[in-house]
Length: 107
Image (tube, rainbow, N blue to C red):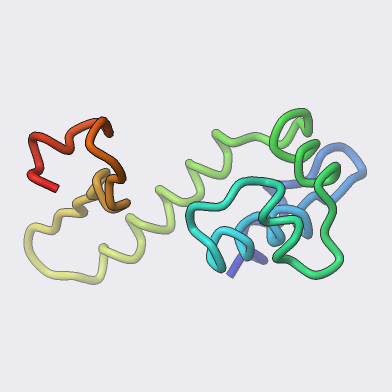
């Protein structure tokens, strides 16, 4: 699936799509992970490479977001009638009594 986004992760002569795959694969294994945990989870990954990819690599997040938006629109285009995509920003269960919105959600 990430192959479709490969050109969005090119930086000059460098292809950063393999590192993008490592990040996504790591997040799929452990959604609440950080770069250290992803580096431990993904075989042949390294903390330094992931950190550089997230913090300093000049790939365009906007280009990736635009491609995702384009793909999403395309996926819904075949549906008939009005269609909506709802994104639940509270999909991660809150922890502790002081977490944001715990009182509101009654968690």
